[in-house]
Image 1 (cartoon, one colour):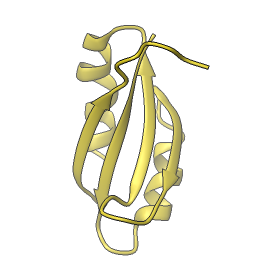
Image 2: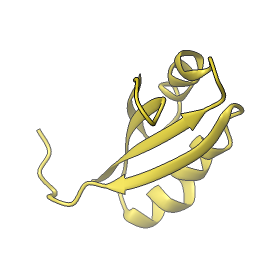
Image 3: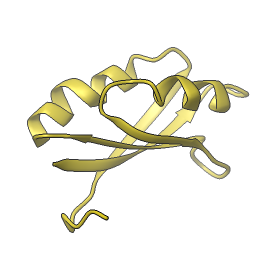
Length: 80
């Protein structure tokens, strides 16, 4: 399995609602709203990197209220 963190900026005041909405999407392993330069941090996963890039990431980016995303693939391959 390939996993990544997505750092997400949202419209003002929408972080909690968007995090809850993202938690129900396919490929989303966890979604939390946070403080700092990003508003939501999502852990995503799929069987292949291609599937992650072509399916999971675009489905998240299409959610209304998201203004910017940064996808950070997990490099070590070790999963708890």
